[in-house]
Length: 281
Ligand code: PGA
Image (tube, rainbow, N blue to C red):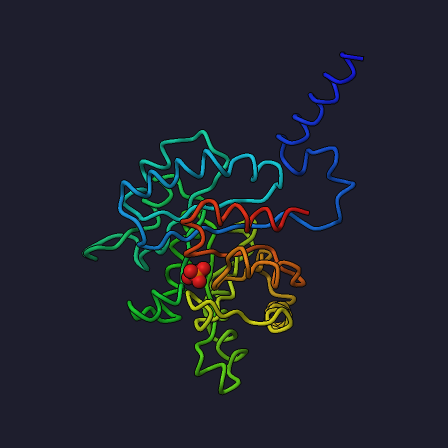
């Protein structure tokens, strides 16, 4: 009897701690793929605070990630990347928040894709609206950044999305087509196994306002139609903008959703954990 209880407990423990795909209970779960969670820490925190936050991630999110099978990608401030990458004990991936459109040269303040790779990144965010708006990064620049990432074998996380004015003028699809087409031209099938496209309506970022699920579904379906039949790697579709514990439920069942890009909430570990666990099916 004692033996039986012991083995039951052991089984529970094991099941809780092995990755999703290897988990024997996986087949009994509703068929929903694990998601990507891209944690964009932006410039919210100093170098030391980035390291401290990573420590909190390790303490509080490792078991959540291993039990759910979700892929957690951390995008720290670039100065903290090396120190964070040095710590290989957690099952998280690293990404740059942006990268230079050039490989090397007299580009003061830029970070090249090769350095991102050497620092331990697997991914790189490009085209974030804050870069497009404050640093005037055009579609052409974003395409060059994609090329730099791909050249280093890094997986691009391409951010796209319309402003409030563009939405009002019914230009959402036109904007997305323009932003995505520029990047897709440089992505060929052989370079990476897949890439991520984050639909982030500019008006939803940091505003507490979210699109309706059917609006995101329409955008996703438009992206699928736009890219159908092209000789490019599979696209993973993310949503980003004001995701938090009270908003995640409204979009987590979005058709074709492969994950979330999370800004502000990702620097609050307790809240972020709730978001990730809300997608535990
Ligand atoms: P937010 O940011 O979650 O703070 O709205 C998302 C983003 O900018 O990618």
